[in-house]
Amino acid sequence: MRDTGKPRTRKAARLSLGLALGASALLTAATGPALAAPAPVDIPDYQAALDAVRSQATHNAVCRFLSVPLPDGGPRGAQTIPARTDPCEGVPSFTVKLPAALNEITPAFAAGTARPVLAEALRIAYVVSPVSPDSGSGRSATVLLAATQGGGWHLAGVRESDSDGTYPTKGALGATVFSEPQLHAWYQLKLDGTVEPLNDAAKAGLDGRTSVSLADYQNLVKGRYADKQPGSEYDTKGFSSGFRPTAPAHDASSPAPLIIGGSTAALALAGGTFALRRRRRAM
Image (cartoon, rainbow, N blue to C red; front, top):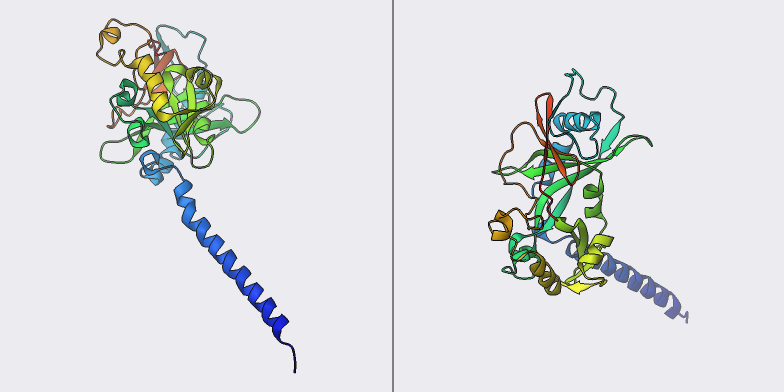
């Protein structure tokens, strides 16, 4: 009589392996979305954000920004920009990359009145897209989109350097990257609820610690900003260390976007003129 035990064993092994691989694939598919950034900090209407950063209006705004050098300190008056049929004439080629959420701590979280949970601790300040030169020359920048009332996104400005556009993608898998703009600090909030620094300013913001709970981090920012909220005596007297979120009001902006040249100056684009005005330091 033939021994059929071994073939059956091999078939059973192959079947078990197939089932195991299938189960693994199903597990990966099931756990994949759970590792993505939680819904409160996802970009609502991502396609609208993508359309906005890829629009000709955004491309032209970046060209206008890159065509005008911003001197250190900046002038106090207005600069007239020669009218051009093609705003990108003479500007090195660049690429506007995919948009990402720029999350910041909320005023209520900084004041200590919000719970130390993701949905109450963070909010989208802007949607950002890094602008990188296509060659070794040229400046980097960041496109900023603000939420439009009723849904969608509109061009809010262009900022010097692409750090605001690249940091949001530097977190670990499943982590939510956010900024404490008063310190120029970048952190990641991991799935286990811990906050970790992503740059030196964030390390200083955590008093040198490599990881703290979200509740402990809230205690730190409460100590820094609870008595410095908008409308407080500290704020109204014009001191330099008040807490003021950078997120704009969620309504349509004027057709001319705010063009931010650095941490201490802002450029307002109005037709062919850039009017430079100093901003109070928010650190």
